[in-house]
Length: 270
Image (cartoon, rainbow, N blue to C red; front, side, top):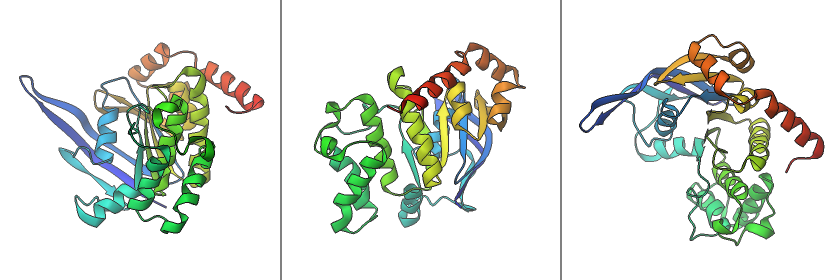
């Protein structure tokens, strides 16, 4: 069991000409293997700042992040081990893959850098990972990202994230840049991988319907503070905070998502 603790984290940015901006205000949560936390909020609520701190792209102004009870190392082998344990799926599959490299290269590189398998097994592992995300290795391995659809690119990004065999995954708005028609297939894939691989997933989204379905727990973030948290159904169906109620009222009919999912499941996933 891997446990990641976000403990009393505050993040303050110095903004030229405007003083200071508090992006996060005393935020705490615990992410464990086999569990999914949905982090919900509008743009500017602080969701992406949390992702950046978890992936070491930013550091907290106050508070700390712990992995299995120990502070995350800031350098050396310890930091590298942490980054192998926690991987990220970025929002934009069009920008997260280098257009000059083949799909084989994107999936193979973390296998080599993290010494996941012996060199003689890399070819087979690349194929296994692509099949794991429901892509045909023979059809995509030698192609460049621009030759794939958005949904296929995001599946490649997920395969790359899984290559290091992480225990935790941060998915930052993973389908917001995709066509509506293919979002559900990618989300179903993430849900299956989370369950089968025992991953701990932080699912960052503004979509209450998908947060309810794919999360065990939901945290609602408003202006850098957690204003509500609890079991997914409780937060979405009986919200207590006025901000959560506003989000729910402004969202499309959440039951439409479940009807669509039911139709797709009965007809086969895309």
